[in-house]
Length: 110
Length: 118
Image (cartoon, rainbow over all chains, first blue to last red; front, side):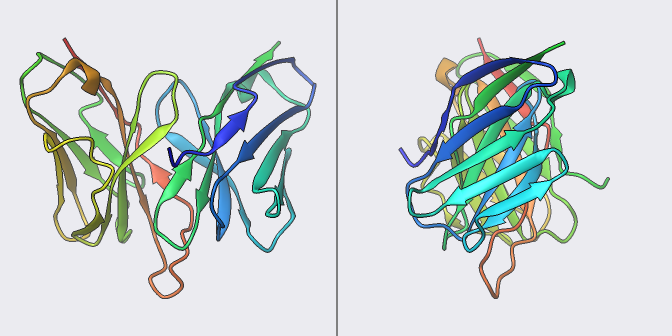
């Protein structure tokens, strides 16, 4: 399978807590992107980190990238009930494909 | 519209019938992708268009699946003689892939077509 993997597969936290999800990929990359999916429909782009970057922030999101381990993590700080969704990483290499991970289902309890 | 549009939103079909799914990408986006997502699973790559050519069709599961694109515009994914295993959400995405650097930028997704084969 070309798919990357994410862990955990599912995560349940209380509102206000931080949520961390991890992604591993298989090939060298140009960049790695994180997407959010609500209710099993369209995905929304959250953040992109290039292969020469190690950390990036956007609002309550923090992404790290470790190319030596072929892994990335997404941290959502001060989570809200509205953050409940599935989160996917997508790696892009020298080809055109976005290779998606298997996703983490996040549930934030109010 | 400003986003990627897919139609129909939902489709229920009988086993053995053909279905056609449509995707209208964002205007000016040269790259267009089709993905399949089975319930509770990740996204499975089907096909990629750059302009109206499809350099990679390797993700199409069988010869029952085909896709075409008109210029840098509408794409249709056709599934012939549908099977129950084809039931899934079919997602289309477009991106303004930079041809010179060949770097993928952000992909914009439609809301998908939920196909149910009964």
